[in-house]
Image (cartoon, rainbow, N blue to C red; front, side, top):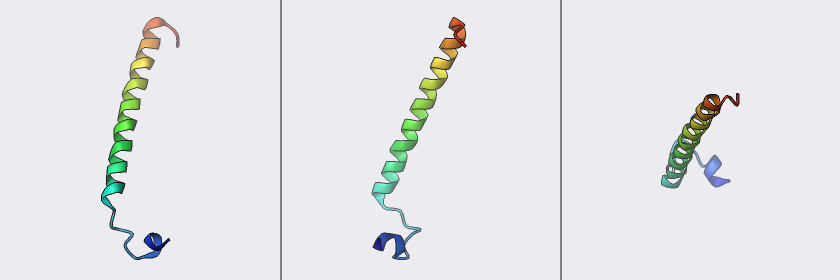
Length: 47
């Protein structure tokens, strides 16, 4: 609670930055996989 109202809202901790970086990497990975499977389904005539 103190972190939320401590007036330091603009400062991000290193852990927060690391978590955001990991999540963005995962989103990118999942996007690539989705695109791959979408293309494969089109080639097989499944869509």
